Amino acid sequence: MRAVVQNDKSRTLRRLALGGGAAALAAAARRWGLDQVPLTPPPPPAVKPRITARDGFEVDHQEDWNLPPVFTTIPTRQKVVFLTIDDGAEKDPRFLAMMHELKIPYTAFLSDYLVRDDYAYFRRMRSYGNTLNNHTLHHPYLPGLSYEEQKDEICGMQAVMKKQFGKAPTVFRPPYGNYNQDTLVAAKECGIKYAPIWNEEVFVDHWEYREDDKRLRRGDIVLTHFRGRDDWDGTMVDDMRRFLNKVTREGYAVARLEDYL
Image (cartoon, rainbow, N blue to C red; front, top):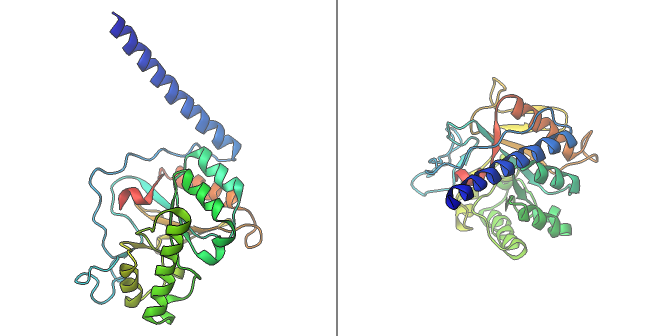
């Protein structure tokens, strides 16, 4: 009898915990002005999808040199998209609070010249479970540099990431989405395995699309930037409100990119 009572009590506590979590998310959605509560992503796939370079985005010797693939979408049947945020210029504490309260995962691609004045901000971001990745030291146009210069930009940022955040990442985004064979060879030499770019970009007042039909797809990688009123007619909170309202309205959850790599 005691075991039955204990099991009933455990189930009740689980139901209360789940209900409390849903209530907290609903309250957070209202507090941040969202139209709906963001959808919860499914569990990460037990078997990771095979990631290859997008057609037309390969470089010479992409396969036989096993170079990091450049891709814009994760192959998945799950109705998820992935949020990635570049550079690190704006350090809005309200953005951190919003995303933490709403439990929205995202990946930051950092350039040292923009983050070095406040590494602590990004340590806090990482402490909330978000991933920090490589976006070079100075955000140059990489194809205009020599191989050694590109390697210095990428490996140099790897060293900064390891020193400041405890780990050198295996994921790298070339600035502006521009790269050549030297970029990917250098990235591989620096310990990089993946070079995702994006299929859509969200701004505080509009979206931009890579595909002609201008719609989201399962597994799409979405780009935005660490920007605020100095650059936009709004804040990062406004930007995230636009992003979350659209993806939720269209039935997408936001998943963690690294869970699929």
